[in-house]
Length: 175
Image (cartoon, rainbow, N blue to C red; front, side, top):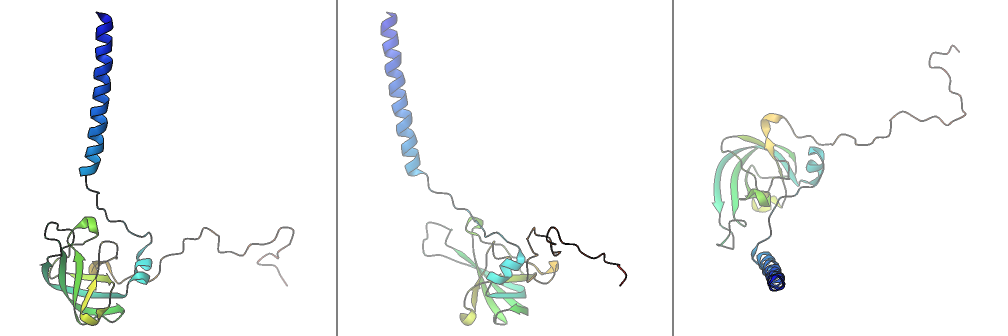
């Protein structure tokens, strides 16, 4: 009788293992990949270099444009109407449409109407539309003008190294 129970338990264990393995495989088929925003490393100076247009502007309007796929909002776009107040780089029009993704997972950003921003944007502004996103560097204008260069990241000392075995005069030596 104990031999019968042992065989039955082994068989049950094998069946359970197969069911769990099949469930895991099917679960992998029906789970969609996650979307996440991933940005290049670097500071505001790097973002300034990568941008086609950098300007300070006032957001005066907002509208949502539906994307090509009606089943998902990931391709929808928010179009902000921005009045350019000061140009730092590029040639954006005085009234520019600024497009960004609706979803934060696809690097979209939210701007507030009637607030000023330093905008880092890309694209050809000839049609009056440029693009920005979470990684572009767009930020409130109250934080000041754009930083155009990143600070040096070298760990090498800036003083001139002296070769071993050479003598150097004292800085205050009398001549």
